Image (cartoon, rainbow, N blue to C red; front, side):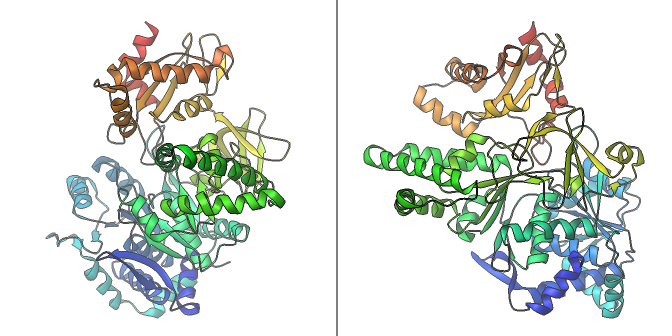
Length: 588
């Protein structure tokens, strides 16, 4: 098996004229060929060597998704160095922690705002020698800083032979990259992934979805996260498909429409946004149009249900499907940007089954994947012909998944990580006899599909000694379009309660219809609306699992406020700490 950087260089030879990536410049998507991309990686690799980077040296990368991010990453791996991505939302102190923990001698930055973060803490970064700025950044007058052109020019100081000696000397079991966890329970840990972890994991899923050079993906989720690296870096190198770099998160919807990707990965929040937008548009239909839309969705759900079991529609249903496609599906898909989408996936957090069912009614099947950085991204994956909404699918190809006696999900395979960087104690707790202890609770159904039932550390134990998994309740609350986030409370307390935040866009529409003017947490009309959602949800659960009280928080949870990680996971301890007065009032 070849390493990811070796594959990039090979693609430069085997498909030199095909586009490797696109960047939007001057209002147009401009292509860069595989030959040119491979040349950029080689030059950047030689530049790192010229700056004294040795085998095993970490290289920090901080910035939004763009070509220089990936070139730096692949170039670092190519010369035996170890890229370590940093979230753009990280504070100066958090950046300092990762740079110092990894002991990175070089950091590659996107722009001036990221430089300001490093400048704030530079006196506390004793190992940092060079800062490289990506293209387009203003010139920074500092002896530590190199522009992108200055950095790449350093490559002339090292021979191609020396570069290829480093590349050809890579071992598959060698450390390739560091993925720093988003830190829901403490300081980030550096997940060590080998070259084999990355290449092997990408290779297993390619034949299942028949991914090839004609596919295209839109890169927009944080590249410091393993999920985005899987699609933008590993899969692109292995399968030769092209990558479009989104302009920004704010322009995501526009970019999706322009690119019409064949492969699209979204976290639940992204799918929730699409869901809210489509529902709103469909809700504007009246009369015959509304009836046609409802009929088409019922046809779509029936066809998707067949396809999820590996079957295809025939007879009258096939005829209805073709009509529904002409009248509704094709129009909705094009408007969303999914007219040519073959693979739609959701991961990083649980997505509501209702959202998956909704999109299946529009002939869009979203395959939910489950995993973590510690197993290179995937533990299990719903796939064509074997999908159940609500489950996270069968085990990833050629990966063993077992359920421990206490319900914990255990994983063994070539995707399982090497351990945590400089943290032997945490490694020994997580890796036991070759099995990754995920920390998640789950069970298999009769068809071999994995269902997540909770997280060991998230389990609420009430004052009465009852164990309650909060995830299903929170997912149920978040199904309501007005609810942005929901956190269930109740550990060592007499009953369960919940705190919720309100989606600002949806509340603006709600206010207009209801003639309301109050802030969300002061609105009685809104409170009644959420109460009806809670009542409906409680009817589906046993009494001990029902939410007895709830509170609407005065502001959204945020990364800046410390309640969300950069990947938008909720930090429960911080929510409890920051809104202690609101929570305590419910139990007064």
